[in-house]
Length: 406
Image (cartoon, rainbow, N blue to C red; front, side, top):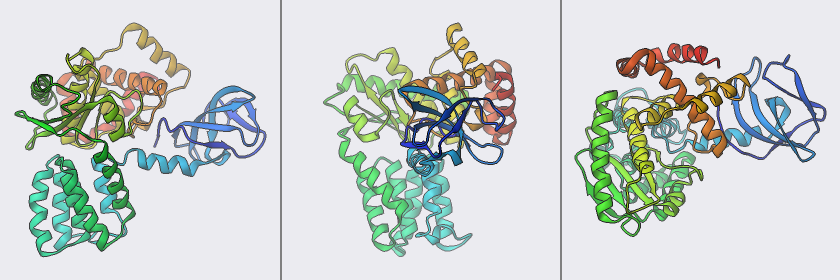
């Protein structure tokens, strides 16, 4: 498993530690590191006997890059903790985390009672049908205030774009059975709600657009709603997703977007169960905004079809938003591969919201190169077939790793 882009406080554990050019114990040593040298973790992969981390290290005012084993670094625990938090609002991750909470045993039972309702509700939430999940949960909650069902109801309400109701459900769940997982989600959504001033709504055929009227004129919002409807139709025809409930899209000023999402500075949009896009020019739908709307709509469509690794999510989203790699970019990708500076696709699993700008550009370029290669060889039908048969993904990933030289 690989995680990218967590720039955390870590340090070299012992003196005379070799900084190697690769993860193999036999890889050449590029430098000998002193104890306490600051380490920035870029990403990690599974090594032969322990995890191996691609890092940059500050030594005598110089930045050195290479590989270190987990046993050579102080601060790995912080890396793992930040990894868990960075993908917290990914819907599938949240559903699984809540269901595995030690404080909510009814969600882990195998069958019957609250667990049967929980299983159906969790599946509906994961399939982008949160309103249907609420319809299933609410009668059960009137008869039995189970903290696990309350936690799921809060998630369904949040996915349905009702943060107030979500917080009420989670507060009720916490009052009955304190849960660190639900508490963390409560605090994050509470922060999100405080920074969100997008109170105006427009309804399209496929989407509900909520926008900040002080930042986006109503005419621009109408145009965005039309674009989102058109893009969902186009993308769903390509990938094969269907929406039984409207997709939620939120458009905000840049400042409000950063406050409510805590996203990276380079972020031009994200999908965490809802499409979220910052607006730079509120009077004109610039090409960059059109690409962002298409990109995040692709994420929404893919989520309806299953849970996919980051490289596939981001590669397909770029492809269907009109991005492509020119000759210079392809050369850069080839150079990065040759220099061993990018990981295999099979390790690009997690969300990239915490990447710095440089590593984000590299990760996006590699994912797009992989998807373009697969598209050229298999066509649109091949992509749709892969999404319908996820058991093929490991083999497809391995084949692409080999063809890209990763």
